[in-house]
Length: 285
Image 1 (tube, rainbow, N blue to C red):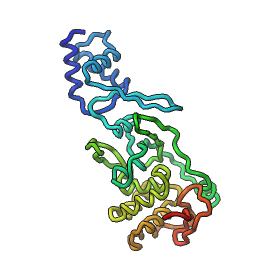
Image 2 (tube, one colour):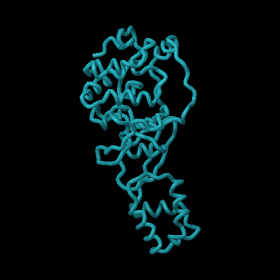
Image 3 (spheres, one colour):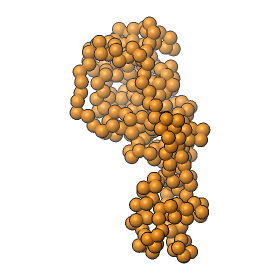
Image 4 (cartoon, rainbow, N blue to C red):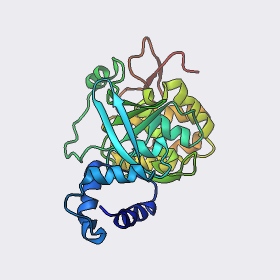
């Protein structure tokens, strides 16, 4: 292909804002722009990739897993690992321990990316025996884990929340990110404490955030997400433990407390709080 045609393509891609693309998207873009570029039919997606690489317009990023192989993205601009991690699933967002970090409550260790399941109509009833069984063993954790340089990326297929508490935020490099709000993040790490390094880390985050949060917003999000399990008991207990004034806990205390619940999974000889009907780790600080 003649140099002037190559320059048209290169100059167009120079204007692309930082993003990650798949090979399929590049191929589709070539299909829609071929006539405008006056590119011959023999010019394929491999030729496009080679052209952009030769002109330092595009880089290639690959994440890899011992069990799941690798995934490739074609990178335009200075894309951070957090942005890259969110490029593999549509409408995904940063959550759990990563969201704690973005809210200034924890160091960044693993990058957690949540892409939600499709909505489900069933809402099973729970029993005390069912709760006892569910929490007697360790928390199940995602094995869909990849490496990217020095970063670990864990993909989560979470409950459908219809976007409850998902916000736009600037990352450490000033990059635009989607993550969970402070209140939504605190709910998530109570539901899955191991994705925040364990319950002691979760309590530490609550203590740091107690003057920045709205219990009413936590209760609103809980009502919207509609968990089957009574997480209002766990949240009420840990907010109280973190030092939130008693009168501010009313939005959670007003909800029914029917069954005995658990703050964590796989606890050995837990202590019990009768006010919240909650078993919790005996060594919780």
